[in-house]
Each structure stands twice: as structure tokens, then as C-alpha cells.
Image 1 (cartoon, one colour):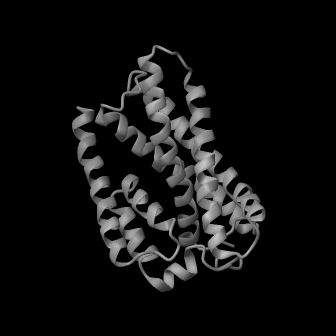
Image 2 (image 1 turned 60 degrees about the vertical axis):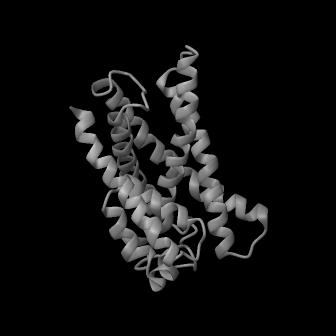
Length: 224
């Protein structure tokens, strides 16, 4: 029953991502990495991701103001739009982290290698952190003319905290989903599993929002 309910939501997410990809070919974002992040936003936020892209990522004026291109002052400039885009970077890194982690988990299960759920969570966190820092590195490098080591340090400083909080939200949701919905089975062949993962991404987004707000307000995050 859940698989049947999950399929339309997953298909809507896929269609939203494809619509954004199609539009990006006509209106590419000036920050190259954002051309990856926006379709991924549509993937776990069906329809909402498209609305966000249309109003925050597609318009050149919004791109310059909100998409990490120029420094902004705290206060009024710290709008929900800025926090949304910052949190989207953490979400994109988490998606790539899950894409890489899931085949590893599936292979280990096939080989009858037993791991606790928290060990899977740590593996996913490490991979996600590396990808998130990679994303932030290119975002900061595009905006600031600083050395490679300084850029890397800023990327680590600004992305680690929100990504850890994002992964915490995913872990809590998936731990509950595995116990009460998925019968402790990590099975990528089930649409219900991907639906739970999709919902966990939204949960992580909610968790990470205050973390990005905290960093931006204190002038730590590169969007400020």
C-alpha cells in the first residue's frame, strides 16, 4: 500500500528535477555548482523546488543577491531566501552522500556483513561532509579571490555544522522509518524506501535551517 502511495510523490519529484534541468539549459546559473544543486532541490521537494528555482535561482537579479555571488550584510539581508539557498547546499551534499552510501550498504548486506544503523550513519556523514566541503569550496572560490588553502578552510568552517545537523535529521527520521515502516530493511528496490528517504531529506532541511540561520546571523557563513 505504501509503495503505491509513494510512487506518485517520487515521480513528481523526478519530474520537478527534470523541469529545472531543462530550464537551466536556457538559463544557466552563474555559479556552476548551483546548476547541480537546484535540480536536486526539486528531487526531494516536488513542485516546491520548481517554485523556489523560478523565484530564487532563475532571475539574474536574484542570482546576484542570493546565490553566494556577493557578500551581504547581516540583518535585513539575512532573508529566508538566503537561508533557503544555503540549506539547499547541505541538502545536495546529503543526496550525493546517500547515493554513494547506499550501494556500499547493499553490497555489505549481500556479503552478509552486519553493521549497526549508527555505523551506516557515520559512513554517510563522512562522505556527505567531503562532498559538502567540495561544493562550498567552489562556491567560495567563485565569490572570493583568496588562496586555495584559505578557501578550503572557509568551506570546512561554514559547511561542517549545518551538514552535521542535516544528517542528524535524516538519521532520526530514517531510524524511526526503519523501525515502524520499513521493518528494519534497507531495500533500494522498494519505492517506499525511497519515499522515506525523500521525506528524511525534507526533515533534514528543517533541522539544518536553524543551523544556517545561526551561522549567517553571526557572519560565519560565506553568504554573509
